[in-house]
Structures are given as C-alpha cells and as structure tokens.
Image 1 (cartoon, one colour):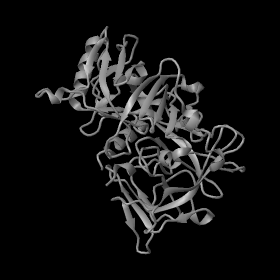
Image 2: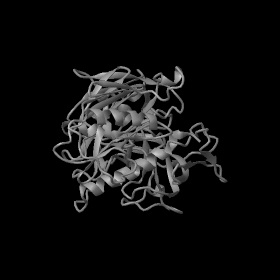
Image 3: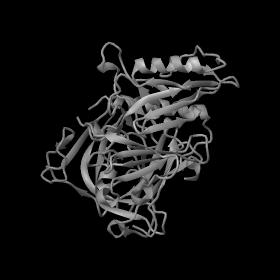
Image 4: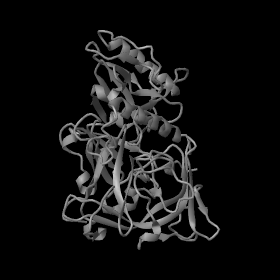
Length: 439
C-alpha cells in the first residue's frame, strides 16, 4: 500500500461567482489562506471550548496521524484561508460546478485529494454538506483503462470497470470510492478566483473511522503524482510555501502560497536539501541534531557500531499535518537529559501521566527552558520556547518532542511562525523566521 494516500490532507474553501481558466494565469503564482480550526478566524470557531480542550483534541489527532505513517489566474495571486483545528491546519477549496466548499487538514504528508460524496453508503459525520457529484456538470468518473487511473496497490477496478480506490489507515480508519476528475476552485488575492479543471480526486462513498466532523476529507500537498502540488505542475514550477500562526496568536488565519508568490528570501533564510526517498509522497530532510543550551546533541541512534552513530541522510519528514515532533525513543531520552541539565533553576516536575508526553513541568515563573537550535544540513534554525514546549492542560508544560519507533516527523508545532518554502524542482526547503499573523 502506498503511504502517499494514507494521510489526512489539505482542503481549500472558496465561493466566487467569477471564474477564469487556470491556463490564463499559468505564469503567475497564487496563494491560499490557512487557519486553525479552533481559531477566531475559523468559521467553525467554538468559543465555549477552553484552550486546553482544543489542544487535547489536537494531540489525539496527532497521535492517530503518526500511527498512519506505519502503512505503507487572476490579476493577483490566488489565495484562500488556512486555519487552526486544535493542533492542525485546515485549508479550504471548492469543488465542482457549481462550486461546493470542502475542508481538510493542510497536509504535506499526503497525496490523494478526496472528500466524502453523496450518496454515502457509510460516512463519518461532517458539518459541511456532502459533495454530490450528480449536481456537478464537471464531474467525470475515470474508467479502469484510462491513463489517469493510477496503477498502485490502492487502486481497484470496480465491477462496472470504473477506477476506484481503497485507502486504509493505521488506526483502522478507511475510505473507499472512485477516482474521478473535477474542477477545483482556488481563492485569489486578485478580483477573481482561479479554476483548475479536470483535477484528479477521490470521491469517497464509504468512509469511517476517527475523522473529525470538522473536515470533509483530504487534500494532499505531498510529492506524489496525485497531490495538488504535482497536479499544478509547471504552473507553479514545484514551489509552495506557508506560514503557520501559533494557536494563541491573532485570529489563527495564515496563508499558503503557490508559484512565484511562494518565494522565501531575504535575511535569516536557512535552506536545506530535500532528500529523494521512497515513498515519494514525503518531504525528507536531514536533521543533524539539536543544540540545547550550547550543547550539541547529534541526531544519531544506537552506539554499538560506527555506522549506527552516523547522522543518516533524509532522516526526518517535514509534515504540516502532524502536530508534535516524533523522534526515536533513544534520541528523545538524550534530549530530555540535556534539557533537564540546562533548565536552571530546575522547575517542578509533574507526576501526572500525560501520554505521549514524558517530560512535563508545573508551569510557573521559574520555568525558563534553555535555548534550542535545530541543526539542519543546510544551517541552524533557532526555536522559540513554543516550538519545543506545549501546554496540553492548564498549568502543565511538556516537551513537544515525543517517541516514535517508526518515522521521525517534524510536525507543525516546530514550524509555526516560520515562512517555510518547498522547492520540489530545486530540491530544497527553506525556513525564515516570521510573524505569521502578518503573512
């Protein structure tokens, strides 16, 4: 099974009456807003929830998501909101003709764009209306013999010779449906939105599991052929960027950019190579380690052989759809030891069990974490305390670096307030400190 289709993805939300062909704007870049689900800028903001409730919901989703890794133009730049859903970032698009809004997690760790479709034989609850392909004049089902029908282990041919898909997730969730083509509409910074005709997406008629009712499906920004980034192709020259607002700042709304408007440049930019590995969905980079309080902690595992202590190339995945930072157990233990050593005066530890967190303290004026720097192959990126520590509940502060025996994942908690640009053609990812509330 290709991992390229097993991660929650990115959706965009747009509703405009004036449309233009994307081919008319193919030389321009475009942007779309991103925002957290529970932020004031989100249309689904629930003021009755406490900050702790919002964060705990995001952690539950983050752990479920980490488990899934175990399976294998307009006159301006198009733009749409991305907003916070607890610890995740949702993106809006519209689908079909007439356009219907769909919402899902902004996900660099997934490829297939899919949404729940009517009529559902079995579907999870969602707040938005179901997309109904019968009501769209641009919906087309792909036959099995079409070159547009992907040839991988998740593609199936139905009894009536239609191209289908069957996605299975590590937590037991699933989606079954048809691979189809449809028009996707992206909001623009200019007076008109941009339409992407004949985009490949999955129309899910049988979906169930641990999906949030806030979302309708998945839109992938990964490196595979079916992702939004790949389908845009030469139009954006493999470039996109985003700036994720921390949960507690501003209205939670930030921006994702495509093409020329995705450039990351100027003072303070750190550029590190992307490493090509399988599956091609993921954006692999080389993390050399962390420097904590001036002490370097190389990202190595084991100590029995010379090779086991070397930093491996492409050892971590950059994933906007995962909240926390997941690292091998032995390396997390090393980091915890050094953090304890350099946190002076020593804060009061908590005895409460807050899985998956292991290093937690009672919040207070005495808690002053050491300076932490992420040492990438292309340079050093200094982290703020909110990049490395989170408050899962009132009065408790925990290290956001947790254990994983599978993939190492650099989640969005460590990406916030950075303008992060991906160049899949040039093979690099760039980090630039930024105030994402102003992006």
